[in-house]
Length: 264
Image (cartoon, rainbow, N blue to C red; front, side):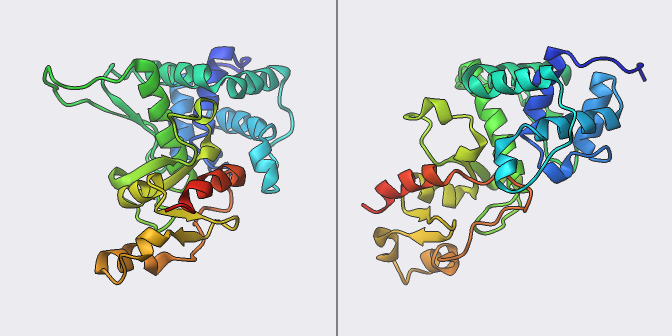
């Protein structure tokens, strides 16, 4: 392993990307994602974990939950934190591209960060000429947001606790199409099953200031349909489930979502 060396801006860009895909309690040297990243950066897992802890000390979302990171954040850490979060529309795609390069991912491959397995590359299947391709910047942003939000909810739907990753969606509280500055903000995301994501997107469900599930009048009018009863009414009033070291959804964003929900 290489001797101790100063962190570069490029390395911190990658680290900030992965930082938002881990919860605070996962930022330790035995965590598979930390180990994978350390090997790729030719650093020790302990040094990567410590730097993640330094970054955590700069995170206002963790401070809201009474969580403190490690002291000793450098001036460059502070500068990179401000640059990253001040221009998410530019820095997130750049950081996702840097992570993909580090992992030697092909242009159509998927880089996933399921925290129990570490970072891994899923090779893209052969595609025909009719395959739709998103602009690279948008795709990179989506990939980052999906991993960060799903991992913030410990890989489970916040309503049902469904834990099948392929059936989970990082739902935007404030829509992607109308709130450009919040598109990649983890606090603008909920991890929901595909069914509950569709209902949330259409304002058929929402959450109150205590993050308890609300059902719209339109959805309640479909009772006692079995599917509505079992998938929605059974969870009404239940608090959205997140780990204690997760970043909480922004309640102001949720209040804005409820404005349209109240009309349904």
